[in-house]
Length: 217
Ligand SMILES: CC(C)(COP(=O)(O)OP(=O)(O)OC[C@H]1O[C@@H](n2cnc3c(N)ncnc32)[C@H](O)[C@@H]1OP(=O)(O)O)[C@@H](O)C(=O)NCCC(=O)NCCS
Image (tube, rainbow, N blue to C red; front, top):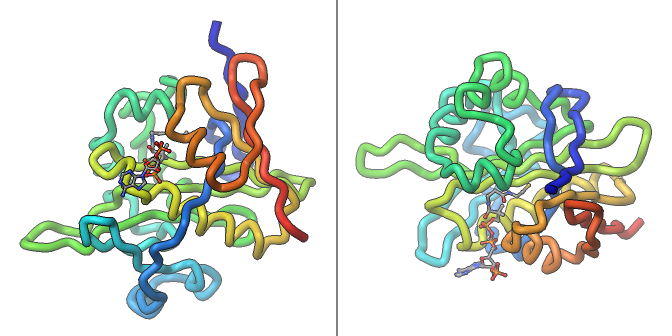
Protein backbone atom coordinates (compact mmCIF):
# COMPACT_ATOMS: atom_id res chain seq x y z
CA UNK A 1 0.00 0.00 0.00
CA UNK A 2 1.28 3.42 -0.90
CA UNK A 3 1.82 5.70 2.06
CA UNK A 4 2.72 9.30 1.43
CA UNK A 5 4.03 11.86 3.82
CA UNK A 6 2.08 15.09 3.49
CA UNK A 7 2.30 18.47 5.08
CA UNK A 8 -0.20 21.27 5.24
CA UNK A 9 1.07 24.70 4.34
CA UNK A 10 0.33 27.24 7.03
CA UNK A 11 0.07 30.03 4.52
CA UNK A 12 -1.95 28.30 1.80
CA UNK A 13 -3.69 25.49 3.61
CA UNK A 14 -2.62 23.23 0.75
CA UNK A 15 -1.76 19.62 1.34
CA UNK A 16 1.39 18.66 -0.44
CA UNK A 17 4.13 16.12 -0.74
CA UNK A 18 7.38 17.65 0.33
CA UNK A 19 9.93 17.87 -2.43
CA UNK A 20 12.91 20.03 -2.97
CA UNK A 21 15.42 20.36 -5.72
CA UNK A 22 17.91 22.52 -7.45
CA UNK A 23 19.56 22.67 -10.87
CA UNK A 24 22.73 23.85 -12.57
CA UNK A 25 22.31 27.30 -13.88
CA UNK A 26 22.03 28.37 -17.41
CA UNK A 27 21.01 31.72 -16.04
CA UNK A 28 21.47 34.25 -18.79
CA UNK A 29 21.36 37.48 -16.83
CA UNK A 30 19.41 39.41 -14.26
CA UNK A 31 18.14 42.08 -16.57
CA UNK A 32 14.59 40.79 -16.31
CA UNK A 33 14.52 42.16 -12.77
CA UNK A 34 13.88 45.52 -14.28
CA UNK A 35 11.20 44.21 -16.65
CA UNK A 36 8.55 43.50 -14.03
CA UNK A 37 7.78 46.73 -12.25
CA UNK A 38 4.91 45.09 -10.38
CA UNK A 39 7.35 42.84 -8.53
CA UNK A 40 7.85 43.86 -4.98
CA UNK A 41 11.45 44.85 -4.25
CA UNK A 42 11.67 41.87 -1.89
CA UNK A 43 11.53 39.43 -4.78
CA UNK A 44 13.47 41.18 -7.51
CA UNK A 45 16.77 39.49 -6.79
CA UNK A 46 15.20 36.18 -7.79
CA UNK A 47 14.30 37.24 -11.32
CA UNK A 48 16.43 35.52 -13.96
CA UNK A 49 16.37 34.81 -17.63
CA UNK A 50 17.13 31.20 -18.51
CA UNK A 51 17.58 29.36 -21.77
CA UNK A 52 16.55 25.84 -22.77
CA UNK A 53 19.05 23.82 -24.83
CA UNK A 54 16.74 24.51 -27.80
CA UNK A 55 17.39 28.23 -27.42
CA UNK A 56 13.93 29.08 -26.06
CA UNK A 57 14.22 31.58 -23.25
CA UNK A 58 12.02 31.99 -20.20
CA UNK A 59 11.89 34.36 -17.29
CA UNK A 60 12.09 32.77 -13.86
CA UNK A 61 10.50 35.13 -11.38
CA UNK A 62 8.44 35.25 -8.18
CA UNK A 63 4.77 34.56 -8.68
CA UNK A 64 2.46 37.60 -8.62
CA UNK A 65 -1.19 38.08 -7.57
CA UNK A 66 -2.12 38.83 -11.18
CA UNK A 67 -0.85 35.40 -12.31
CA UNK A 68 -4.13 33.66 -11.47
CA UNK A 69 -5.32 33.28 -15.06
CA UNK A 70 -1.91 32.07 -16.21
CA UNK A 71 -1.84 29.55 -13.38
CA UNK A 72 -5.28 28.33 -14.36
CA UNK A 73 -4.04 27.82 -17.93
CA UNK A 74 -0.90 26.09 -16.61
CA UNK A 75 -2.95 23.57 -14.65
CA UNK A 76 -4.96 22.75 -17.77
CA UNK A 77 -1.78 21.68 -19.58
CA UNK A 78 -0.75 19.05 -17.03
CA UNK A 79 -1.01 15.34 -17.71
CA UNK A 80 -2.68 13.05 -15.20
CA UNK A 81 0.70 11.49 -14.52
CA UNK A 82 2.30 14.81 -13.62
CA UNK A 83 -0.62 15.71 -11.39
CA UNK A 84 -0.38 12.34 -9.68
CA UNK A 85 3.36 12.67 -9.13
CA UNK A 86 2.92 16.14 -7.69
CA UNK A 87 -0.29 15.69 -5.69
CA UNK A 88 -0.55 11.88 -5.41
CA UNK A 89 -3.80 12.11 -7.35
CA UNK A 90 -5.74 13.88 -4.66
CA UNK A 91 -6.35 17.19 -6.41
CA UNK A 92 -8.54 17.27 -9.52
CA UNK A 93 -8.41 20.15 -11.99
CA UNK A 94 -11.56 21.82 -10.65
CA UNK A 95 -10.06 21.77 -7.15
CA UNK A 96 -6.69 23.06 -8.34
CA UNK A 97 -8.08 26.09 -10.11
CA UNK A 98 -10.59 27.49 -7.69
CA UNK A 99 -10.35 31.24 -7.31
CA UNK A 100 -9.67 30.95 -3.58
CA UNK A 101 -6.84 28.49 -4.01
CA UNK A 102 -5.17 30.32 -6.87
CA UNK A 103 -5.42 33.68 -5.14
CA UNK A 104 -3.70 32.17 -2.09
CA UNK A 105 -1.02 30.48 -4.17
CA UNK A 106 -0.29 33.61 -6.20
CA UNK A 107 0.32 35.66 -3.10
CA UNK A 108 3.72 35.30 -1.45
CA UNK A 109 4.35 35.95 2.21
CA UNK A 110 7.90 37.18 1.68
CA UNK A 111 10.45 35.69 4.03
CA UNK A 112 8.17 32.76 4.77
CA UNK A 113 7.32 31.48 1.34
CA UNK A 114 8.61 31.84 -2.19
CA UNK A 115 7.08 30.55 -5.39
CA UNK A 116 9.09 30.93 -8.57
CA UNK A 117 7.40 30.52 -11.94
CA UNK A 118 8.95 30.15 -15.38
CA UNK A 119 7.19 32.23 -18.00
CA UNK A 120 7.70 32.04 -21.75
CA UNK A 121 8.39 35.25 -23.62
CA UNK A 122 5.40 34.84 -25.91
CA UNK A 123 5.94 35.07 -29.63
CA UNK A 124 4.00 35.14 -32.90
CA UNK A 125 0.77 36.21 -31.23
CA UNK A 126 1.23 33.63 -28.47
CA UNK A 127 0.73 35.20 -25.07
CA UNK A 128 3.36 34.51 -22.40
CA UNK A 129 2.61 31.30 -20.53
CA UNK A 130 3.60 29.95 -17.14
CA UNK A 131 5.18 26.56 -17.75
CA UNK A 132 6.57 25.66 -14.32
CA UNK A 133 6.26 26.57 -10.68
CA UNK A 134 8.44 25.73 -7.70
CA UNK A 135 7.58 26.61 -4.15
CA UNK A 136 9.64 26.88 -0.97
CA UNK A 137 7.98 27.23 2.42
CA UNK A 138 9.61 27.81 5.75
CA UNK A 139 8.25 25.40 8.35
CA UNK A 140 6.93 27.31 11.36
CA UNK A 141 9.16 27.26 14.40
CA UNK A 142 12.09 25.63 12.64
CA UNK A 143 14.91 26.51 10.27
CA UNK A 144 13.63 23.85 7.91
CA UNK A 145 12.02 24.44 4.57
CA UNK A 146 9.96 22.27 2.28
CA UNK A 147 9.84 22.48 -1.42
CA UNK A 148 7.68 21.35 -4.33
CA UNK A 149 8.18 21.53 -8.06
CA UNK A 150 5.96 21.12 -11.12
CA UNK A 151 6.97 21.54 -14.77
CA UNK A 152 4.37 21.18 -17.50
CA UNK A 153 4.84 18.00 -19.51
CA UNK A 154 5.95 19.61 -22.75
CA UNK A 155 8.94 21.21 -21.04
CA UNK A 156 10.00 18.39 -18.72
CA UNK A 157 13.46 16.79 -18.82
CA UNK A 158 15.12 19.80 -20.38
CA UNK A 159 16.72 21.20 -17.27
CA UNK A 160 14.07 23.69 -16.13
CA UNK A 161 13.00 21.89 -12.95
CA UNK A 162 16.62 21.68 -11.89
CA UNK A 163 17.16 25.37 -12.61
CA UNK A 164 14.17 26.54 -10.60
CA UNK A 165 15.21 24.21 -7.82
CA UNK A 166 18.67 25.82 -7.72
CA UNK A 167 17.04 29.23 -7.54
CA UNK A 168 14.95 28.03 -4.58
CA UNK A 169 18.11 26.81 -2.88
CA UNK A 170 19.41 30.36 -3.22
CA UNK A 171 16.27 31.57 -1.46
CA UNK A 172 16.78 28.98 1.30
CA UNK A 173 20.34 30.21 1.69
CA UNK A 174 19.14 33.82 1.95
CA UNK A 175 16.66 32.78 4.63
CA UNK A 176 19.50 31.02 6.48
CA UNK A 177 17.62 27.75 6.55
CA UNK A 178 19.46 24.75 7.98
CA UNK A 179 17.69 21.99 6.07
CA UNK A 180 15.49 21.37 3.15
CA UNK A 181 13.26 18.31 3.32
CA UNK A 182 11.36 16.70 0.49
CA UNK A 183 9.14 13.65 0.29
CA UNK A 184 8.77 12.07 -3.12
CA UNK A 185 6.79 9.15 -4.46
CA UNK A 186 8.96 6.05 -4.84
CA UNK A 187 8.15 5.80 -8.55
CA UNK A 188 9.20 9.39 -9.24
CA UNK A 189 12.65 8.61 -10.56
CA UNK A 190 13.02 11.94 -12.36
CA UNK A 191 12.50 13.98 -9.21
CA UNK A 192 14.75 11.68 -7.20
CA UNK A 193 17.55 12.13 -9.74
CA UNK A 194 17.08 15.89 -9.71
CA UNK A 195 17.30 15.86 -5.92
CA UNK A 196 20.40 13.64 -5.85
CA UNK A 197 22.12 15.90 -8.34
CA UNK A 198 21.34 18.84 -6.09
CA UNK A 199 23.01 17.14 -3.14
CA UNK A 200 20.02 15.74 -1.31
CA UNK A 201 20.40 12.46 0.55
CA UNK A 202 17.50 10.12 -0.11
CA UNK A 203 16.18 7.33 2.04
CA UNK A 204 13.10 5.15 2.00
CA UNK A 205 10.54 6.33 4.53
CA UNK A 206 7.66 3.92 4.64
CA UNK A 207 5.82 4.24 1.35
CA UNK A 208 7.64 7.39 0.27
CA UNK A 209 11.19 8.58 -0.21
CA UNK A 210 12.52 11.30 2.06
CA UNK A 211 15.16 13.65 0.71
CA UNK A 212 17.15 15.92 3.02
CA UNK A 213 19.74 18.53 2.20
CA UNK A 214 21.73 20.26 4.91
CA UNK A 215 22.60 23.81 3.95
CA UNK A 216 25.98 25.35 4.72
CA UNK A 217 25.74 27.88 7.57
C1 LIG B 1 10.08 16.21 -11.51
C2 LIG B 1 10.18 17.50 -12.30
C3 LIG B 1 9.85 18.68 -11.41
C4 LIG B 1 11.64 17.66 -12.78
O1 LIG B 1 11.71 18.80 -13.59
P1 LIG B 1 12.37 18.64 -15.05
O2 LIG B 1 12.45 19.99 -15.65
O3 LIG B 1 11.61 17.61 -15.80
O4 LIG B 1 13.78 18.09 -14.61
P2 LIG B 1 15.20 18.33 -15.33
O5 LIG B 1 15.03 18.41 -16.78
O6 LIG B 1 15.87 19.44 -14.65
O7 LIG B 1 15.94 16.99 -14.94
C5 LIG B 1 15.30 15.76 -15.19
C6 LIG B 1 16.07 14.94 -16.17
O8 LIG B 1 16.23 15.62 -17.40
C7 LIG B 1 17.63 15.55 -17.74
N1 LIG B 1 17.93 16.70 -18.56
C8 LIG B 1 18.19 17.93 -18.15
N2 LIG B 1 18.48 18.70 -19.22
C9 LIG B 1 18.38 17.91 -20.30
C10 LIG B 1 18.54 18.11 -21.67
N3 LIG B 1 18.91 19.29 -22.16
N4 LIG B 1 18.34 17.09 -22.51
C11 LIG B 1 17.99 15.89 -22.03
N5 LIG B 1 17.82 15.64 -20.73
C12 LIG B 1 18.02 16.64 -19.88
C13 LIG B 1 18.29 15.55 -16.42
O9 LIG B 1 19.63 15.07 -16.50
C14 LIG B 1 17.46 14.59 -15.72
O10 LIG B 1 17.71 13.33 -16.27
P3 LIG B 1 17.65 12.05 -15.44
O11 LIG B 1 16.25 12.03 -14.87
O12 LIG B 1 17.90 10.95 -16.39
O13 LIG B 1 18.72 12.23 -14.42
C15 LIG B 1 9.23 17.48 -13.52
O14 LIG B 1 9.57 16.41 -14.37
C16 LIG B 1 7.77 17.41 -13.11
O15 LIG B 1 7.14 18.42 -12.89
N6 LIG B 1 7.23 16.18 -13.01
C17 LIG B 1 5.83 16.01 -12.61
C18 LIG B 1 5.54 16.51 -11.21
C19 LIG B 1 6.55 16.02 -10.22
O16 LIG B 1 6.98 14.89 -10.26
N7 LIG B 1 6.94 16.91 -9.30
C20 LIG B 1 7.88 16.55 -8.28
C21 LIG B 1 7.19 16.05 -7.06
S1 LIG B 1 7.07 17.35 -5.86
